[in-house]
Length: 454
View 1 (tube, rainbow, N blue to C red):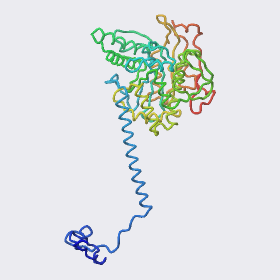
View 2: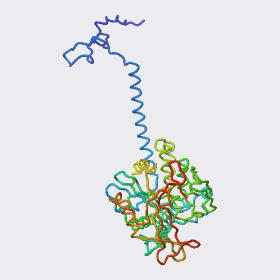
View 3: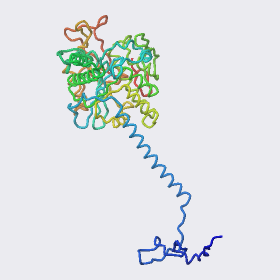
View 4: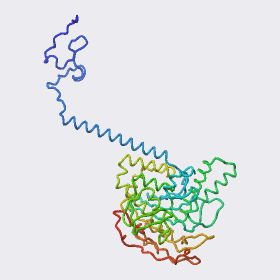
């Protein structure tokens, strides 16, 4: 038994408002008294314990705050990871920018069978892509699309530039004159690599890096000059990008007016709405054989793919599903290069608003088909193109009629009609003069929110 017995507890009335010191004696409880030295009276009733409902509300509030903080941290981590891992380019540094809050984005799809470092894609990937050897394709920009996003929040427009348009090339070292618009990238890349090699540079990665930067800059300058508008941002996608993007989205919905089968691209699809996996998506955007207008119809396939991808982004909850978002980000890391400093997180949020028919697609018109040094070309009227773009996206776009032969269309309609062949031009081999195409109308098959194409 302890030598020091504890004193009996004092009556509650006497102990209220006091605390026990080390010696067991009651002392004033300063935490419950008023200002020091005034000895305010202690309250006469005990503090009530929170009710069960109140405790539950506090718990839910605390949990909600924790989740909000966690979600914010996750979003920042994903953005930081994407921004630090995706390829970036200086090709737009010092370039003129759009005004009034508008944004012009150039989408470039390379027909290259190589990765961002110039290494051949794995054989198993090439087999799935139905794309042949890694030496095929070069560095042509077979997909060129200018996406105009108005600063006032009105409907966006996407202008497809046919790859064989015969235009003045800009920014290609040692070259002056006209060539196919798709060639600016590859010509500039080869010229810079040759110059560096002559100077003694042997590092393949350095040659690839500097060559591609020159290619991007030349392609952007060429398109900017051809269309007559600033370019604020760009995104470059390699051939495997279509495959990985469709896979990350869990398939891309498209709609075909007619069944197709093409051994060159691997396209083999029934008519009607359908969802394409990665391999099928690549075949879909690459097909031109067996289509009435060849490359011009392929351009509409590319528009339809973009419309289907943005539709799927919104419908599949990709922006709110961390797993799907991570797959999309991983796909971007492999295949996408953008201009340095582009706030991709803001654009990803904006892209959600580009789905559901909120983008109007326009294929730039051609005057006819011709030949240059034995290759087929599209004859174009540069000034007509500039007027069309100015009317479509300028301050008076809503009040101005479209340029002749250039009515806007969705991928589900036939689009702008090529005009009659220009003087000195000839129709494509084995074809009749450029046929007229309808410029409006409802798609024959309802694609369930996705436009139907030929």
